[in-house]
Image (tube, rainbow, N blue to C red):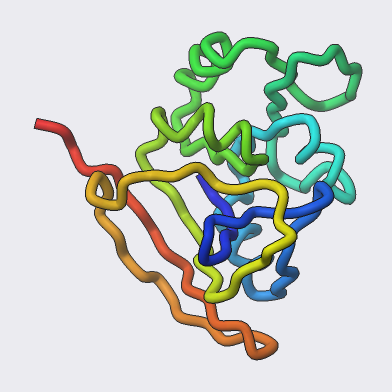
Length: 158
């Protein structure tokens, strides 16, 4: 999973990102390029275009007809489908998709932004940090906004 979140797990508002940070966009690109990306329909429609060198996979209840993408209406069928990928598959949003996939994720790359947005209307799901090993990959200040690129790896259960 990959996401940029505020202090209160804010993800976005009005089907758009809250913070538009150039270095974070580069972080997203570097960590999703060449990988299948899973998203909901709203996230798909929020993209400016198909993202190059990434297979788009959409989980939705709606019927859609788009070229060059896979569409699934059932999370379990999608999970069975991605079992055959040898490489990492990235979940890129939105909030409902993160909530559905968080129990299956073994790694999360989160950009933790040191700001709040009271107008946010979608949020990353709560997760218990004690169940994850946390590594700060990079501390960044961009346009007077402090944020960290953080990797969470799920701890193995005994």
